[in-house]
Length: 44
Picture 1 (cartoon, rainbow, N blue to C red):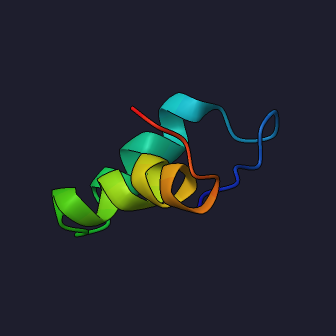
Picture 2: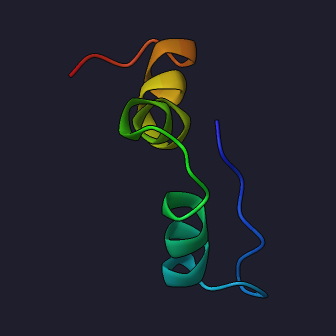
């Protein structure tokens, strides 16, 4: 799961830095969404 430094770092900036960090798209998807969904047992 991901936690940001908002409001010190705006979401647009951390998303750009995260995507430019060389992470695979499936890793970004897990960190920003799928891990939280799994841990919180949310249904889609």
